[in-house]
Length: 208
Image (cartoon, rainbow, N blue to C red; front, side, top):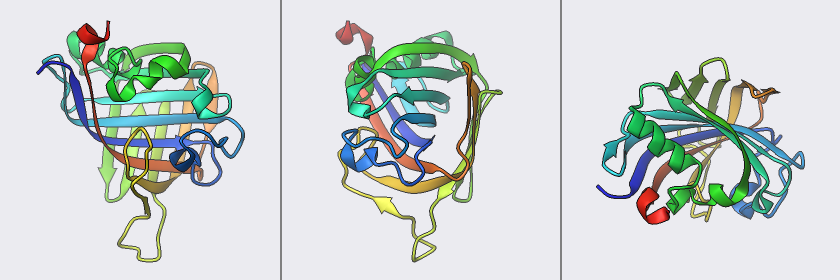
């Protein structure tokens, strides 16, 4: 059980007025508003960090990107499930700060300012096709897939090179509220994504 791995689901809601162009442009096209503000939630169905079990834990993120995603200068904050053991907490911080390399290693390059990390009650729930993320008083979000021509099938952008995963479900936020680190955002009705994730990396010993 060396290294780290996470399997589960990620949801994200940003300030783009239509579906986020970063999925296809891989950050080379500017967000629809010229800059990116976003919250995200990660549900870990199975996971470990150097032998420490991460299964069943959730993580909330706040992201702020001043322009083209690929140019960096991101600001980020992480909220780690308060149920995490001390070892799991430290492991998740290393994963989501990019220190553990692997899938999320780009965070170490792109994030220039880490606003903070803290334990918090992080609830990630599904109700039908809806996904809800509640992170204390910091994030209150709900998203659902955009209705397609066949209402029984989601609109999915497949076979991408997007770092989160190759297949992204096109969604929209029915609620997207952030109150954190001086940010007051409301992204109801704006772009959202759903992605099944399968991430991994070498963890801290090899990443040092």
